[in-house]
Image 1: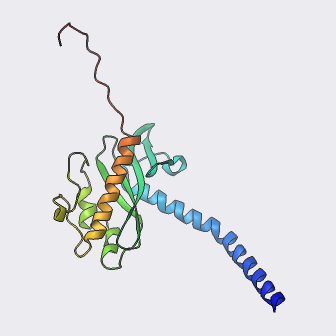
Image 2 (image 1 turned 90 degrees about the horizontal axis):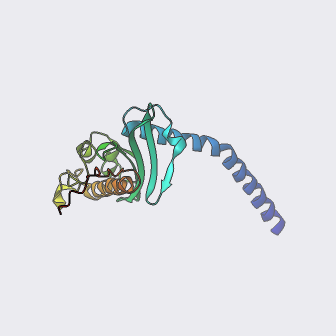
Image 3 (image 1 turned 120 degrees about the vertical axis):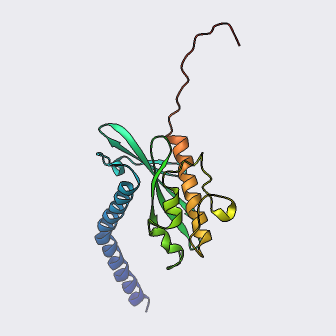
Length: 190
């Protein structure tokens, strides 16, 4: 009995290992393609390959998009807790911190309700475009903000906006360049 169970376990382990080895590369390629599509959707046109220079930082991942050597935008991937589980979002920012676009990379939200967030024209995604997190109140209108929630999916909408806020914090901390004030001569007056 012990010998039979040991052989069965050995065969099953070998099969599982083989399946993993065979499927690992296609799964990684699929995930990379999904990330590249999300970056292209959330940043202005670029001529580099941002996914080749991912910068993992506390709170997310930063992908820099350049055109002719000039930075045209940043795609920042973050996760927040949604109604059904983790909600992974890619948020694109212009160099000044304005939201260019968003993309939902993965989610576990309820089909027909929170899952509507994958549609680019749904209220929260559409309404954050062109907004700047420091100048706009990017919370749902139920909480006094400027953004309409998805009908019957306020928790998902809040999670999405929380992810956008987290992405902005990553941007602000790691990407925003600080412009130093011009050096003025001291004329003796205070």
